[in-house]
Amino acid sequence: QPLLGATEIRRLAEEIGVRPTKTLGQNFVIDGNTIRRIVTAANIDPEETVLEVGPGLGSLTLGLLDAAKHVVAVEIDPVLAAKLPETIAAFRPEKVGSIDVVLSDAMRVTELPAQPTALVANLPYNVAVPVVLHLLEHFPSLQHGLVMVQDEVADRMVAGPGSKTYGVPSVKGAWYSHMRKAGVIGMNVFWPAPKINSGLVGFTRHEPPATRASREEVFAVIDGAFAQRRKTLRAALAGWAGGAAQAETYLRQAGVDPSARGEVIDVAAFARIAEAKIPMTA
Ligand code: SAM
Image (cartoon, rainbow, N blue to C red; front, top):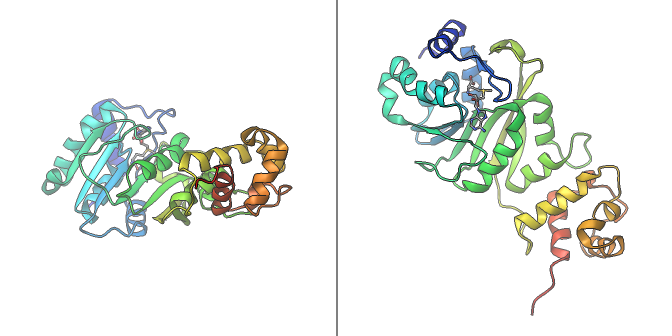
């Protein structure tokens, strides 16, 4: 099935008078091979419902409609959201019943017309990480996915403890899922072309570490530990614990060296630290 190329994308943009904006991260894919690569790497089962964030002019949406049973597309830009059903009708008339277009901010959406099992998206780069975390938190039906983000953000999302790029996105991502790098995409497959490479991140959901601490409590420890990256955990978590001595007690209880830095410990250790602060009940 033909996918949208540079000519179609420019024509669609012209028809609705869209001037891509940086604030909404509007860089549209104009290369069918890139779309095929993303869809293949996403490993979609033909029975699946896929959530796409930011369908834009529909480049990826057409590829997803070919591979999945149903697509839920969440777009924040009302002009793009209004145009999408027309584009589907023009290029995939047999698929018009297989898509729900939702006009909404993907960082705030909490209800969808169908339960998606996969997330596949070329994400708006400035909000990529919060969007992925929000969706993994609010839609437990999401079991796996593939997202395109800024390459440097992709490296941060997939990093493990001890690596230079390990930080808040890596640990919070690891709470929900196993994340892996699935490739790099150059700038010339987009219109307008961004100034940086993009990276593909694949993920598979897993159970968070077993802990008495809530997700919010664990995330507060993660935020505290990385707010001052260069400090030891004892110092960085003093505010959270109510003093450095108390932080040291919790860290020892969790089996974590108080003089270590956040960048060397994994999500399970963060969960143990959070748990150490919770009083034991009888
Ligand atoms: N999927 C299209 C493609 O690959 O050509 C467009 C991708 S473009 C990088 C990002 C898209 O996300 C734009 O259509 C933009 O309007 C939309 N967007 C930006 N912020 C959003 C948000 N918070 N929620 C939903 N969509 C958003």
